[in-house]
Amino acid sequence: MKLKGKVALVTGAARGLGRAYALHLGKLGAVVAINDINLEAAKEYGEQLTAETVMDEVRAFGVPSIGIQADVTDRSQVEMMVEEVVEEFGRLDILVNNAGGHLRPGERSQASSMPEEDLRYILDLNLLGTIFTCQAASRPMKEQRSGKIVNVSSQAGLHSTASGGGRGAHYSVAKAGVVHYTRLLAAELGPYGINVNCIAPGWILSSRAIAQGRAEPERRRTLESQIALRRLGLPEDCAKVVEFLVTDLSDYVTGQCIPICGGYCLF
Image (tube, rainbow, N blue to C red; front, side, top):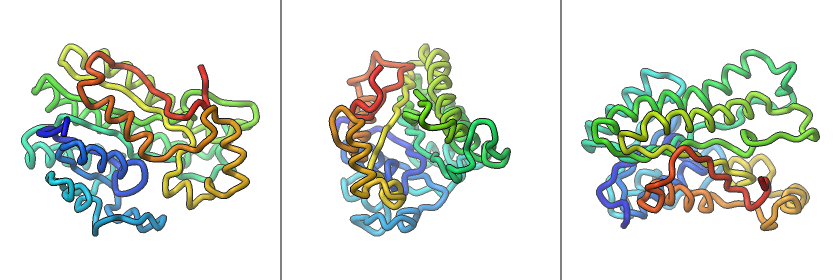
């Protein structure tokens, strides 16, 4: 219960990696606010919950939890979300900016030709949503003079390959922006006792990735052959690193991006 008494907000937490982060924080004793644009998102990919909602799953650990349906690309909704958390629990100690994704067709994502509407959507969801939420959360954290912020980038934001042919450009650029924004925010908030760090998951078996074919034998073998540890990651692999970044284990770590990829990207 190393997070007992702490209040956490996890965005995009109704399923997948966000849900794993929320459950892990609840297991560690934190009060957890669950945000998503759809609080029943687990149904979209057949993800099985152990209770009626993710909030109920968190409450099973003996800690309070609330759900807040909000779109992180809308600054006004983000402001109201953070205000609701502070009004309900009196403070905000932990923010995990998980909401995001590569939610546009890959075949039209080349760097030289991606449609403007796709570019704006992906930047809004992955970069601006992160910035809006960090800005809103930083205010109560600055007043407290303490806090832990974990932004979520991706391996796509750290490197690119010629074999990719420039695909996924909008997502890669957005996630690279998350990494550098993390550094800038860490420099600003450090004097207030606030740590700001970032994780960059690799090939993780989230419910959406499984639904999109990542666990199919041939695809899985191809990916695993490129990973030093020779296995795909699980959501809990990422949740353990989040634990490091939101507890006292990382009190002297800020402005960093930690790859969670099993050695897919070695640099």
